[in-house]
Image (tube, rainbow, N blue to C red; front, side, top):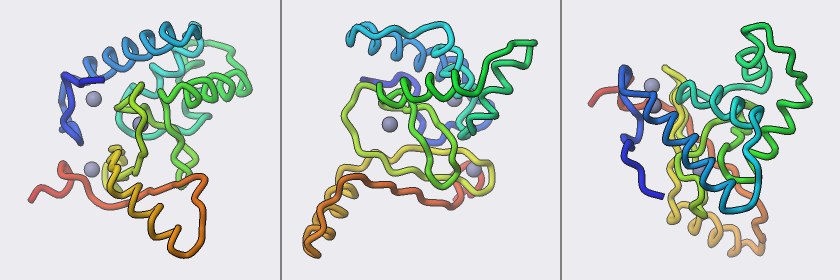
Length: 162
Ligand SMILES: [Zn+2]
Ligand SMILES: [Zn+2]
Ligand SMILES: [Zn+2]
């Protein structure tokens, strides 16, 4: 899926509304194509995640949903997150136990996450080379990879201008 709006680490002050609206539109298309329903709650969870480029924990998401007096339960949020992950719309960051919107929904991709220690932004590397290198290195040791988590911390270009 092509991105009109794809600086890798969007600079502060970028037009984030277009990031968010593109992501929601892509989610609607993907759900439609698969005969799944992006219910109101699922959409609101996705919108909460897309309020920025920083990962959010389930309870942060819940707090955003309920900030205007909503009464959503944690289980409902977890179920919505499961749905969004199953459809490749959201990724879970194991090291933070937090969730981030996928920038390549609908594309079959491996994901490596670059996590900025300064501003907390996360970008998805989606490098097939890295993925294959890990698979090959593991296979050489007789190890069959079934799942792969690559999370790299450092400083993003907005925090570390070079
Ligand atoms: Zn943005
Ligand atoms: Zn992704
Ligand atoms: Zn940063």
